[in-house]
Amino acid sequence: MLIFLVSVLVLIGRFYPGSDADLVDWTPTRSPEVEAQNEIDDIRQMMEAQNEMRRRRGAPEMTDEELRRKVAEDEMTRLRGRGPFSPE
Image 1 (cartoon, rainbow, N blue to C red):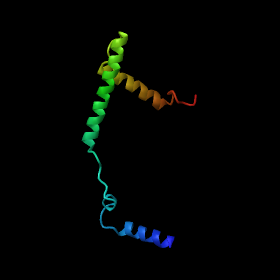
Image 2: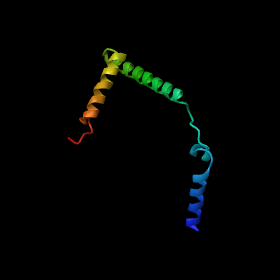
Image 3: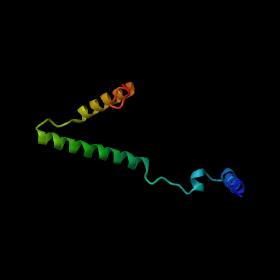
């Protein structure tokens, strides 16, 4: 019985005329443009919160250029395998 059930499911999947996404009625919940805008908004909010903390401490605010430089440094460190979670 189990082999029959699996065989039927495989045949349905193999000979279904539409795509796999059509078979399970899958559609993305958000478009890539909305996802990109959400990422931009998240980064802006995190930077605003970071700058608020810096203002409280009396430190200068972080600029876009400084943020990009730090991200590039972190990425290079990660690519070299010398991050905080490296086995060294």
